[in-house]
Image 1 (cartoon, one colour):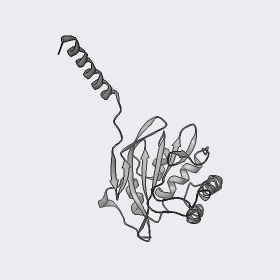
Image 2: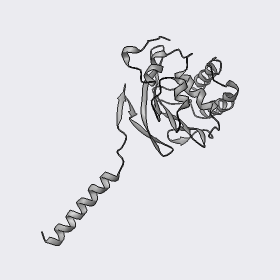
Image 3: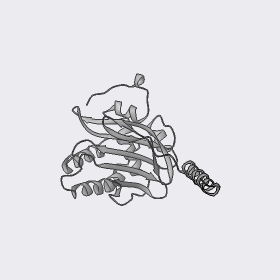
Length: 209
């Protein structure tokens, strides 16, 4: 090999290495009962670490896997609400959910007496969600990914399979209510709440619904 070709080869290798160093590492995914859960996600230009993840069940039937991403560690709903910056709730469907079942679940959440939840402010966005699901043939499907993001300056951004699902919802009330669905004091699945909050397994109190 000539000296010129050798120099070009070395330059190419150095440029390739430099490019690798500049490229942010891809989010690794762990399996949660067969569902891939990313260690990190990008929301509004910020990298968020996985805070906790678990499986929601109904009568022992797996319904969805859920992962919570926050900009900092939080030990309670109050702390999660007070964190500054973007947040994400990611829901991967593990079975089909009909529009009627989805509507019933939303209605149940509206009837809860969770402190700090403005049910009046929740009704409009919840109605949009129910209507959006109702427009899909047979509702939500196994394998669908629903993401609920808090984006500062924009509000709550809801996407289904990486596509906008409803118009962004301004104000904190809707996202605060969404966090309360899984992190609130009135939740029936306290084990799932503990998983999302990152509570060690030895300290979790298991509930059955």
